[in-house]
Image 1 (cartoon, rainbow, N blue to C red):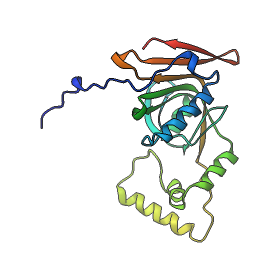
Image 2 (tube, one colour; image 1 turned 90 degrees about the horizontal axis):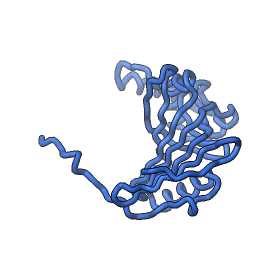
Image 3 (tube, rainbow, N blue to C red; image 1 turned 90 degrees about the vertical axis):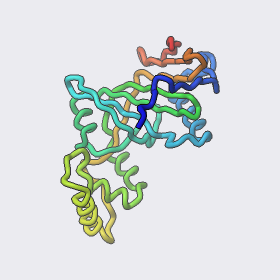
Image 4 (cartoon, rainbow, N blue to C red; image 1 turned 180 degrees about the horizontal axis):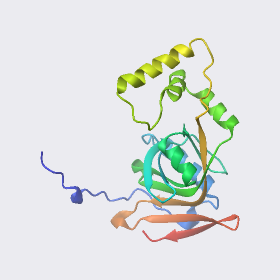
Length: 214
């Protein structure tokens, strides 16, 4: 098989532009506009985002999770608290998110402090999940080494039988996190790599807007 020439893969971005005058003073509201446009454009998995966390000594790792809510406090996702990401958040509560919508030639970078949501918020979201996903939350020892696929399927069958005919409660080790942002950057691809980058920084209880060099 011939090795692909990755150095020659290029796309010129020319769909849209972004200026400081065109964005709202509040980045959460601006995020809502961009999310609405990503959904309207039928972007693939518009709420998929890369979550980066690190250990207490700064060893990073990243993975894709799904954004399930956002509000004035921040950006919400759900996971197993005992997963690798959960353990790293416990060691170092600062993290970063990236959403990328190639169909719109846009990305958003978000940095901030990660905290658990309330028990009630986790319960309320868990109730909305399909029953098979609820069982999966019980069955998966997320991030642990397992012997084989059959082991996981057996766990899933065991919990399906245990909850047969019953309300499937939320596992105590599963729930929500919210990343409370102090930096949010909106990136719009432009031609010749002269991209538009507008960054909001939360300083002294207000959002400061600045343009960054590409």
